[in-house]
Image (cartoon, rainbow, N blue to C red):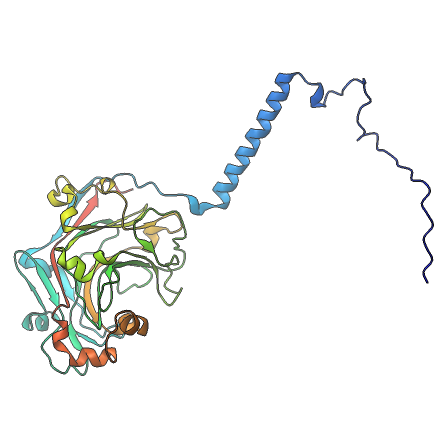
Length: 374
Protein backbone atom coordinates (compact mmCIF):
# COMPACT_ATOMS: atom_id res chain seq x y z
CA UNK A 1 0.00 0.00 0.00
CA UNK A 2 1.05 3.54 -0.63
CA UNK A 3 1.35 5.73 2.37
CA UNK A 4 -1.03 8.67 2.53
CA UNK A 5 0.63 12.03 2.09
CA UNK A 6 0.94 14.23 5.14
CA UNK A 7 -1.70 16.96 5.35
CA UNK A 8 -0.64 20.43 4.37
CA UNK A 9 -0.93 22.53 7.43
CA UNK A 10 0.05 25.96 6.05
CA UNK A 11 1.06 27.76 2.85
CA UNK A 12 3.12 30.92 2.75
CA UNK A 13 2.93 33.22 -0.30
CA UNK A 14 5.51 35.78 -1.30
CA UNK A 15 4.06 38.70 -3.27
CA UNK A 16 6.23 40.56 -5.72
CA UNK A 17 6.00 44.17 -4.63
CA UNK A 18 6.35 45.29 -8.33
CA UNK A 19 3.05 43.58 -9.16
CA UNK A 20 1.13 44.38 -6.03
CA UNK A 21 -1.86 46.69 -6.20
CA UNK A 22 -1.42 50.02 -4.45
CA UNK A 23 -2.91 50.26 -0.99
CA UNK A 24 -6.23 52.00 -0.63
CA UNK A 25 -5.65 55.70 -0.36
CA UNK A 26 -2.06 55.52 -1.56
CA UNK A 27 -1.07 57.94 -4.41
CA UNK A 28 -1.03 56.39 -7.93
CA UNK A 29 2.22 56.24 -9.86
CA UNK A 30 2.69 58.45 -12.99
CA UNK A 31 2.58 55.48 -15.31
CA UNK A 32 -0.76 54.17 -13.97
CA UNK A 33 -3.59 55.32 -16.38
CA UNK A 34 -6.06 55.28 -13.50
CA UNK A 35 -4.45 58.42 -12.21
CA UNK A 36 -4.49 60.26 -15.53
CA UNK A 37 -6.92 63.00 -16.49
CA UNK A 38 -9.84 61.70 -18.68
CA UNK A 39 -8.58 63.34 -21.89
CA UNK A 40 -5.17 61.61 -21.53
CA UNK A 41 -6.87 58.25 -21.21
CA UNK A 42 -8.95 59.02 -24.31
CA UNK A 43 -5.78 59.77 -26.30
CA UNK A 44 -4.18 56.50 -25.19
CA UNK A 45 -7.24 54.51 -26.28
CA UNK A 46 -7.22 56.26 -29.66
CA UNK A 47 -3.55 55.56 -30.16
CA UNK A 48 -4.00 51.85 -29.40
CA UNK A 49 -7.01 51.59 -31.75
CA UNK A 50 -5.10 53.30 -34.58
CA UNK A 51 -2.13 50.97 -34.12
CA UNK A 52 -4.41 47.92 -34.34
CA UNK A 53 -6.06 49.21 -37.54
CA UNK A 54 -2.72 49.99 -39.21
CA UNK A 55 -1.36 46.55 -38.28
CA UNK A 56 -4.43 44.88 -39.75
CA UNK A 57 -4.08 46.82 -43.02
CA UNK A 58 -0.41 45.88 -43.31
CA UNK A 59 -1.23 42.22 -42.74
CA UNK A 60 -3.92 42.27 -45.43
CA UNK A 61 -1.74 44.03 -48.01
CA UNK A 62 1.37 41.93 -47.43
CA UNK A 63 -0.21 38.61 -46.55
CA UNK A 64 -3.28 38.48 -48.80
CA UNK A 65 -2.36 39.84 -52.26
CA UNK A 66 -5.14 37.82 -53.94
CA UNK A 67 -7.83 40.27 -52.75
CA UNK A 68 -6.42 43.13 -54.83
CA UNK A 69 -8.17 43.96 -58.10
CA UNK A 70 -6.58 45.77 -61.05
CA UNK A 71 -7.62 49.16 -62.34
CA UNK A 72 -9.48 48.60 -65.61
CA UNK A 73 -9.53 52.31 -66.35
CA UNK A 74 -11.03 53.27 -69.75
CA UNK A 75 -8.63 53.29 -72.70
CA UNK A 76 -9.00 55.21 -75.94
CA UNK A 77 -8.96 52.71 -78.80
CA UNK A 78 -8.32 53.20 -82.51
CA UNK A 79 -8.99 50.72 -85.31
CA UNK A 80 -5.80 48.96 -86.40
CA UNK A 81 -6.89 46.04 -88.60
CA UNK A 82 -10.14 44.83 -90.11
CA UNK A 83 -10.71 41.37 -91.58
CA UNK A 84 -13.82 41.13 -93.77
CA UNK A 85 -15.16 40.82 -97.29
CA UNK A 86 -13.63 38.92 -100.17
CA UNK A 87 -10.08 39.66 -98.92
CA UNK A 88 -10.70 38.03 -95.52
CA UNK A 89 -8.42 35.02 -96.10
CA UNK A 90 -5.64 37.12 -97.60
CA UNK A 91 -4.66 38.10 -94.06
CA UNK A 92 -4.08 34.51 -92.94
CA UNK A 93 -1.65 31.65 -93.46
CA UNK A 94 -3.06 28.13 -93.85
CA UNK A 95 -1.63 25.59 -91.40
CA UNK A 96 -1.22 22.24 -93.16
CA UNK A 97 1.19 20.30 -90.92
CA UNK A 98 0.26 17.31 -88.79
CA UNK A 99 -2.22 18.26 -86.09
CA UNK A 100 -0.24 18.83 -82.85
CA UNK A 101 -3.22 17.66 -80.76
CA UNK A 102 -3.47 14.25 -82.46
CA UNK A 103 -6.76 14.88 -84.19
CA UNK A 104 -8.27 12.62 -86.82
CA UNK A 105 -7.95 15.48 -89.29
CA UNK A 106 -6.04 16.54 -92.40
CA UNK A 107 -5.59 20.30 -92.49
CA UNK A 108 -5.82 21.58 -96.06
CA UNK A 109 -3.43 24.12 -97.53
CA UNK A 110 -4.80 27.24 -99.21
CA UNK A 111 -5.09 25.75 -102.69
CA UNK A 112 -6.84 22.58 -101.58
CA UNK A 113 -9.13 24.49 -99.23
CA UNK A 114 -10.20 26.81 -102.04
CA UNK A 115 -10.56 24.03 -104.61
CA UNK A 116 -12.75 21.96 -102.28
CA UNK A 117 -14.72 24.98 -101.08
CA UNK A 118 -13.56 24.52 -97.48
CA UNK A 119 -12.88 28.26 -97.27
CA UNK A 120 -14.61 31.00 -99.21
CA UNK A 121 -15.54 34.61 -98.68
CA UNK A 122 -18.15 37.02 -100.00
CA UNK A 123 -18.83 40.68 -99.37
CA UNK A 124 -20.88 39.77 -96.31
CA UNK A 125 -19.14 36.80 -94.66
CA UNK A 126 -16.25 34.32 -94.58
CA UNK A 127 -16.78 30.58 -94.09
CA UNK A 128 -14.48 27.76 -92.92
CA UNK A 129 -15.89 24.25 -93.06
CA UNK A 130 -15.17 20.54 -92.70
CA UNK A 131 -15.31 18.24 -95.74
CA UNK A 132 -18.83 16.77 -95.79
CA UNK A 133 -18.56 14.87 -99.10
CA UNK A 134 -15.78 12.25 -98.88
CA UNK A 135 -17.55 8.95 -98.01
CA UNK A 136 -14.66 7.14 -96.27
CA UNK A 137 -11.96 9.46 -94.95
CA UNK A 138 -9.87 6.63 -93.54
CA UNK A 139 -6.79 8.75 -92.83
CA UNK A 140 -8.68 11.69 -91.36
CA UNK A 141 -11.25 14.12 -92.69
CA UNK A 142 -10.15 17.36 -94.32
CA UNK A 143 -10.63 20.57 -92.39
CA UNK A 144 -9.06 24.00 -92.07
CA UNK A 145 -6.82 25.90 -89.67
CA UNK A 146 -5.85 29.49 -90.46
CA UNK A 147 -3.45 31.81 -88.56
CA UNK A 148 -3.29 35.58 -88.93
CA UNK A 149 -0.14 37.02 -90.46
CA UNK A 150 -0.30 39.97 -88.06
CA UNK A 151 0.56 39.35 -84.42
CA UNK A 152 -0.46 41.27 -81.30
CA UNK A 153 0.75 41.88 -77.76
CA UNK A 154 -2.30 43.86 -76.64
CA UNK A 155 -5.55 45.06 -78.14
CA UNK A 156 -9.32 45.03 -78.26
CA UNK A 157 -10.53 42.27 -80.59
CA UNK A 158 -14.12 42.28 -81.84
CA UNK A 159 -15.34 39.09 -83.53
CA UNK A 160 -18.70 39.23 -85.34
CA UNK A 161 -19.82 35.60 -85.49
CA UNK A 162 -22.74 34.34 -87.58
CA UNK A 163 -22.41 30.57 -87.12
CA UNK A 164 -20.41 28.22 -84.89
CA UNK A 165 -19.52 24.60 -85.84
CA UNK A 166 -20.99 21.67 -83.95
CA UNK A 167 -21.54 17.93 -84.32
CA UNK A 168 -20.14 14.67 -83.00
CA UNK A 169 -16.37 14.47 -83.37
CA UNK A 170 -15.81 18.22 -83.80
CA UNK A 171 -13.45 20.36 -81.73
CA UNK A 172 -13.69 23.94 -83.05
CA UNK A 173 -11.86 26.93 -81.64
CA UNK A 174 -11.27 30.64 -82.16
CA UNK A 175 -8.13 31.50 -80.23
CA UNK A 176 -4.96 33.55 -79.91
CA UNK A 177 -1.49 32.11 -79.49
CA UNK A 178 2.08 32.04 -80.77
CA UNK A 179 2.08 28.49 -82.06
CA UNK A 180 5.83 28.43 -82.58
CA UNK A 181 6.61 29.58 -79.03
CA UNK A 182 4.04 27.72 -76.98
CA UNK A 183 3.41 27.85 -74.07
CA UNK A 184 6.05 30.56 -73.46
CA UNK A 185 3.92 33.23 -75.15
CA UNK A 186 0.59 31.99 -73.85
CA UNK A 187 -2.75 31.01 -75.35
CA UNK A 188 -6.21 32.58 -75.11
CA UNK A 189 -9.14 30.39 -76.15
CA UNK A 190 -11.98 32.79 -76.95
CA UNK A 191 -14.44 30.20 -78.27
CA UNK A 192 -13.97 26.50 -77.73
CA UNK A 193 -16.35 23.58 -77.49
CA UNK A 194 -16.64 19.96 -78.56
CA UNK A 195 -19.14 17.66 -80.22
CA UNK A 196 -22.72 18.95 -79.80
CA UNK A 197 -21.55 22.22 -78.27
CA UNK A 198 -24.71 22.60 -76.18
CA UNK A 199 -22.74 22.78 -72.93
CA UNK A 200 -21.76 26.38 -73.70
CA UNK A 201 -18.54 28.13 -74.65
CA UNK A 202 -15.43 27.72 -72.51
CA UNK A 203 -12.96 30.62 -72.43
CA UNK A 204 -9.54 29.46 -71.26
CA UNK A 205 -5.97 30.68 -70.67
CA UNK A 206 -2.89 28.48 -70.99
CA UNK A 207 0.44 29.85 -69.71
CA UNK A 208 3.82 29.05 -68.27
CA UNK A 209 4.33 28.96 -64.50
CA UNK A 210 3.18 31.90 -62.41
CA UNK A 211 -0.37 32.65 -63.58
CA UNK A 212 -3.29 31.88 -61.28
CA UNK A 213 -6.89 33.01 -61.03
CA UNK A 214 -7.80 32.13 -57.44
CA UNK A 215 -8.40 35.87 -56.93
CA UNK A 216 -11.20 38.41 -56.89
CA UNK A 217 -12.88 38.39 -60.33
CA UNK A 218 -15.86 40.16 -61.85
CA UNK A 219 -17.56 37.89 -64.39
CA UNK A 220 -20.93 36.40 -65.24
CA UNK A 221 -19.54 33.02 -66.35
CA UNK A 222 -18.71 30.06 -64.12
CA UNK A 223 -15.00 29.53 -63.31
CA UNK A 224 -13.81 26.02 -64.11
CA UNK A 225 -10.20 25.90 -62.89
CA UNK A 226 -7.86 28.55 -61.49
CA UNK A 227 -4.39 27.21 -62.37
CA UNK A 228 -3.45 28.56 -65.82
CA UNK A 229 -0.07 26.81 -66.10
CA UNK A 230 0.06 24.30 -68.96
CA UNK A 231 1.81 21.83 -66.66
CA UNK A 232 -1.14 21.72 -64.25
CA UNK A 233 -4.09 19.37 -64.69
CA UNK A 234 -2.97 17.97 -68.03
CA UNK A 235 -2.93 21.41 -69.67
CA UNK A 236 -6.54 22.13 -68.68
CA UNK A 237 -5.75 25.81 -68.17
CA UNK A 238 -7.92 28.22 -66.20
CA UNK A 239 -11.34 28.45 -67.79
CA UNK A 240 -14.71 30.15 -67.55
CA UNK A 241 -17.85 28.44 -68.86
CA UNK A 242 -20.76 30.32 -70.39
CA UNK A 243 -24.34 29.08 -70.54
CA UNK A 244 -25.87 27.18 -73.47
CA UNK A 245 -26.66 30.40 -75.37
CA UNK A 246 -22.96 31.23 -75.80
CA UNK A 247 -22.20 28.52 -78.38
CA UNK A 248 -23.63 26.04 -80.87
CA UNK A 249 -27.18 25.65 -82.11
CA UNK A 250 -28.64 28.12 -79.65
CA UNK A 251 -26.20 30.88 -80.61
CA UNK A 252 -26.72 30.11 -84.31
CA UNK A 253 -30.51 30.18 -84.00
CA UNK A 254 -30.28 33.63 -82.41
CA UNK A 255 -28.40 35.00 -85.41
CA UNK A 256 -24.99 34.76 -83.81
CA UNK A 257 -23.45 37.61 -81.89
CA UNK A 258 -20.30 39.47 -80.90
CA UNK A 259 -17.39 38.17 -78.86
CA UNK A 260 -15.05 40.92 -77.69
CA UNK A 261 -11.65 40.29 -76.10
CA UNK A 262 -9.67 42.96 -74.29
CA UNK A 263 -6.00 42.07 -73.78
CA UNK A 264 -4.14 44.63 -71.67
CA UNK A 265 -1.71 44.95 -68.77
CA UNK A 266 -4.54 45.08 -66.21
CA UNK A 267 -5.96 41.76 -67.37
CA UNK A 268 -7.90 39.84 -70.00
CA UNK A 269 -11.67 40.13 -70.32
CA UNK A 270 -14.13 38.56 -72.75
CA UNK A 271 -17.71 39.71 -73.40
CA UNK A 272 -20.45 37.99 -75.36
CA UNK A 273 -23.35 39.96 -76.83
CA UNK A 274 -26.25 38.19 -78.59
CA UNK A 275 -27.27 39.66 -81.93
CA UNK A 276 -30.09 41.69 -80.42
CA UNK A 277 -28.03 43.16 -77.57
CA UNK A 278 -24.84 44.46 -79.19
CA UNK A 279 -23.65 47.80 -77.72
CA UNK A 280 -24.05 50.73 -80.09
CA UNK A 281 -20.36 51.65 -79.92
CA UNK A 282 -19.54 48.22 -81.38
CA UNK A 283 -22.13 48.54 -84.13
CA UNK A 284 -20.97 52.02 -85.11
CA UNK A 285 -17.28 51.70 -84.14
CA UNK A 286 -17.25 55.48 -84.06
CA UNK A 287 -15.16 56.82 -82.57
CA UNK A 288 -14.30 53.38 -81.11
CA UNK A 289 -15.73 50.74 -78.78
CA UNK A 290 -15.48 51.50 -75.05
CA UNK A 291 -15.44 48.36 -72.85
CA UNK A 292 -15.90 50.46 -69.70
CA UNK A 293 -19.54 50.91 -70.79
CA UNK A 294 -20.32 47.25 -71.42
CA UNK A 295 -20.94 46.02 -67.90
CA UNK A 296 -19.56 42.84 -66.39
CA UNK A 297 -17.64 40.54 -68.72
CA UNK A 298 -18.48 36.91 -69.35
CA UNK A 299 -14.91 36.00 -68.34
CA UNK A 300 -12.44 38.04 -66.30
CA UNK A 301 -8.75 37.13 -65.91
CA UNK A 302 -7.24 39.97 -63.83
CA UNK A 303 -3.51 40.55 -63.44
CA UNK A 304 -3.64 40.15 -59.65
CA UNK A 305 -1.60 36.95 -59.65
CA UNK A 306 -0.63 36.86 -63.34
CA UNK A 307 1.72 39.25 -65.14
CA UNK A 308 -0.26 39.54 -68.38
CA UNK A 309 2.43 41.25 -70.46
CA UNK A 310 5.04 38.59 -69.65
CA UNK A 311 2.70 35.64 -70.27
CA UNK A 312 1.00 36.80 -73.50
CA UNK A 313 3.03 38.03 -76.48
CA UNK A 314 3.15 37.78 -80.25
CA UNK A 315 -0.41 36.44 -80.51
CA UNK A 316 -1.86 35.36 -83.86
CA UNK A 317 -5.61 35.00 -84.41
CA UNK A 318 -6.29 31.33 -85.13
CA UNK A 319 -9.47 29.65 -86.35
CA UNK A 320 -9.74 25.91 -86.81
CA UNK A 321 -12.07 22.91 -86.66
CA UNK A 322 -10.21 19.93 -85.26
CA UNK A 323 -11.74 16.44 -85.29
CA UNK A 324 -11.54 14.04 -82.35
CA UNK A 325 -8.09 14.79 -80.94
CA UNK A 326 -7.05 15.04 -77.31
CA UNK A 327 -10.27 16.73 -76.20
CA UNK A 328 -13.30 15.86 -78.35
CA UNK A 329 -12.56 12.12 -78.34
CA UNK A 330 -12.40 11.87 -74.56
CA UNK A 331 -15.15 9.52 -73.31
CA UNK A 332 -16.54 12.08 -70.84
CA UNK A 333 -17.29 14.41 -73.75
CA UNK A 334 -17.81 12.18 -76.78
CA UNK A 335 -19.89 9.48 -75.09
CA UNK A 336 -21.08 10.57 -71.66
CA UNK A 337 -21.95 14.22 -72.32
CA UNK A 338 -23.05 14.15 -75.97
CA UNK A 339 -23.89 10.44 -76.47
CA UNK A 340 -22.03 10.18 -79.79
CA UNK A 341 -21.96 6.70 -81.38
CA UNK A 342 -19.05 4.27 -81.66
CA UNK A 343 -15.47 5.50 -81.65
CA UNK A 344 -14.75 9.10 -82.60
CA UNK A 345 -12.40 8.28 -85.48
CA UNK A 346 -14.80 5.72 -86.99
CA UNK A 347 -17.66 8.18 -86.84
CA UNK A 348 -15.63 10.98 -88.43
CA UNK A 349 -14.32 8.71 -91.19
CA UNK A 350 -17.65 7.27 -92.26
CA UNK A 351 -20.34 9.91 -91.71
CA UNK A 352 -19.64 12.84 -94.06
CA UNK A 353 -23.17 14.27 -93.97
CA UNK A 354 -22.89 14.72 -90.20
CA UNK A 355 -20.47 17.58 -90.84
CA UNK A 356 -22.80 19.78 -92.86
CA UNK A 357 -23.25 22.02 -89.78
CA UNK A 358 -19.56 21.93 -88.90
CA UNK A 359 -18.63 25.36 -90.19
CA UNK A 360 -17.62 28.80 -88.97
CA UNK A 361 -19.16 31.89 -90.52
CA UNK A 362 -17.85 35.33 -89.65
CA UNK A 363 -19.05 38.77 -90.66
CA UNK A 364 -15.78 40.44 -89.62
CA UNK A 365 -12.86 40.63 -87.21
CA UNK A 366 -11.75 44.06 -85.96
CA UNK A 367 -8.64 44.82 -83.94
CA UNK A 368 -8.24 48.09 -82.01
CA UNK A 369 -5.16 49.38 -80.24
CA UNK A 370 -5.06 51.77 -77.30
CA UNK A 371 -3.64 55.23 -78.03
CA UNK A 372 -1.90 55.11 -74.64
CA UNK A 373 -1.78 51.52 -73.28
CA UNK A 374 -2.17 51.00 -69.55
